[in-house]
Amino acid sequence: MSKSKKNKGVVPVKQTITYDFSSLLTYCSPEEIEKFKEGLNQFSVSSLILNAGKYTSSQLEETFSDLKKDDTDHLLYRFSKEEDRMGKTLEHFAGAFYILDPSSGVISSYLEKLLPKDFVSLDLCAAPGGKTIAMDLRRKDGLYLANDIAFDRAIEISKNAQRLALSNILTLSIDPVKLSLPEMFDLVILDAPCSGSGMIRKEPKMAKDYSEEKVTRLLPIQENLLEKAYECTKKDGIIAYSTCSLSIKEDEEQVKSFMKRHPDVEMIPLSPKEGMVIGKENIGYHMIPGIYDGEGIYFVLLRKTKGDAYQLNQSKDVKKYNDELMSLSFKGNTYLLSRFYQEFSKLPFIAPGMKVYDKSEHPKCEFDHAYSKVSDDIQLVEIDRQTALSYVQGNEVKIDSAIKDGLVILAYQKMRLGLGKNVKGKVKNYLPKGLRSNLY
Image (cartoon, rainbow, N blue to C red; front, side, top):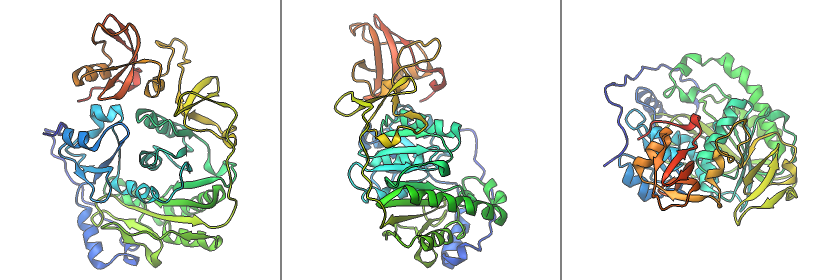
């Protein structure tokens, strides 16, 4: 039986959406356009990507029987957000999965098999981190720099990485065009600012907000970001360009112009999944509501065939923490991360990994919450579901009185929840107030 909580008492009303279909006429068949029209009057589709290093597919399927497993992606499960509030579950809080649109998860499913071992990735416009996180959940050997120009949104990347215990995501906030880096990345992800017309089913206001003026205003921004992506990509590296737009001006025509400027860039041919529409002139792929079982996204994978086969230099500022992690001193704190290179030393990181110490004015605990996700020197205590739910609410909880007094990390089904101080079987709650929540 599913443990997903159903939304009861409110009958959702689907808003009728109208849209200018002129762009679709250039790459969709009449039958596909009819499917799109019908799809606009259906609810949007949501999904999750499993954090398989922390939670198994059998656990997920046993706990949430309403989930629909994707036929071609072993980590992706669809669900109805109108019925199942997956973001309010204990499993979500504990880091069992990440919620995103299924269309967004497709890009990482292709990239997973295309990148070399121990690759290094840069996400130029990352917030809230979906494409980088989806990639990380598939390829733990990668090192991911996730940037967003908006500081508040970049903070959300760090919070998501922390919840999922992803110590190989390094977050920063800078205007991506101003990034000054060598052509050193195996992968550059560019989910470009766009008109958002592919999200009109999920966000009906986007249909009213769409205009050709908006598209025209965004085109030079997309062009500049593509140039920055090119500058940062090493020889044989991949640029993953995407938008949530249906407009060929932002999609195929933008890519075609980019490739004309850079003859050393070639498209990587892919086998389309069911429902994917090949772009105009065979440039990239569209996922369109009603045709593909997800929201509207365009993407193309481009390989840079010339340039510098750059070799990154290991930083001398890191020290070994354990067999998996290194420690780095940064802005008066210590961070744990998988790798770090000299080329990153001057970047304005928000969090280059998992923060170790709480340096606030009057901390309850000397350690930051992030440290509970990766520490190997604090006692780990497994608790049952009801105790875990109480802990997440911010309550003092009881554990086995035989457990040694002192600092503990509480865990549910081996997934770490946070810190507390045990005194004779009573654990004082050290979970930050901003993370406390009523879950089920």
